Amino acid sequence: MKKKVLSVLLCAAMVATLAIGCGGNGGDGGNAGDDKQSTSDDANKGGDDADKGGSDKKVLAVVPKSAGNPYNEREVAGFEEVAKAAGYEVVVKYPEQATADAQQSVIQSLISQDVDAICLAANDENALQASLEDAMAAGIKVCCMDSKVNAASRATFVNQAGTKEIGETLMEAVYDLADGEGKWAILSATSQAANQNAWIDAMKEIMKDEKYSKLELVEVAYGDDEPQKSTDQTQALLEKYSDLKVICAPTTVGINAAAKVLQDKGSSVKLTGLGLPSEMAEYIGEDDEHSCPYMYLWNPIDVGKLGAYVSIALVEGDITGAEGETFTAGDLGEYTIVDAGDGGTEIILGAPFKFDPSNIEEWKEIY
Ligand code: RAM
Image 1: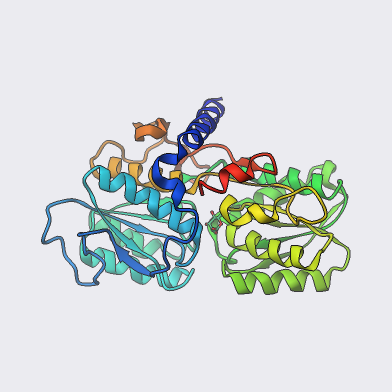
Image 2 (image 1 turned 45 degrees about the vertical axis):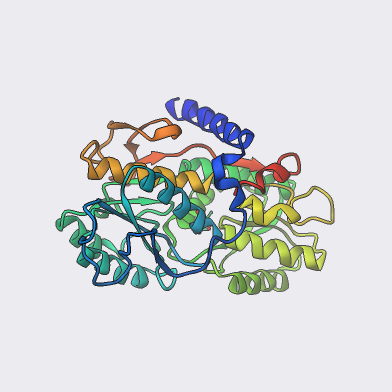
């Protein structure tokens, strides 16, 4: 019930943000740069041997899944905005690849830098446990956003929307676009991505319902959140399954690549999933000219903002990440930490938001 109220509030906040032009974020419609590692303005904490000298500000690190993904850049922008305004230094460390190994070396370097908090979007749920336990043993507060690590490796997790809710939303879209029957495929990110895997598992669970018995999930393909690999995987799906009806891509990189392939080919396969309005506007439409009738997402800038608010609350000792704790996340409002169902806790940003021909032109300006 509480979640519903929160979702409604969040949608209202998103609409309000839209009305006021998103307070400066709206102009950042494209890539925010593709540097793999960067530090905020004067913080200069990105060097591997940097220490806390030079400033007595506390340092919050943010570790996205990978570089070159506009979704991740928006998360970082939101994180930086909140953290800097609150007087913290920010270290942004993009791993070399969307892998746990690459994130592991980033975490080790952040431990040597003695940062105060690490907020990461995990490339693997379990593989980072040893490194993150080292970080926590060194007094660093650890939380995740977007894609979680297991309960033992985090204080809490900023979840963009309820996992089951995302699964239900996407499953319903597939059902609708396939007219209730036929072959469909998933084009995901990496095979280890905790968030995509959780959404896919949720969809598979929902699919057990009789209602979906005439739908056949023929394959889960992995484009690794790389545009070229996602393009190749889409083409391979089309070649393998000539009677494919729908592709669902629960990744902004995958859906963008698939949309272009389908639209360029004039394919009758319909697409849905999770996409950035700024990247998908040209593909959204209900006619034969467009590959994606509608899709969903949440505000990635707000995911990053909430990640920063949680990092700050952990560092200041306002929360520990335990179920039932509450905190205020600036203009995002009041949040309660809830059970994540995996032995740990989470904070749910809001509900997935639908983008279709009626609103895509407005939202493409925002993120
Ligand atoms: C991609 C990433 C990210 C995910 C979005 C929907 O950008 O995989 O983790 O949340 O898609």
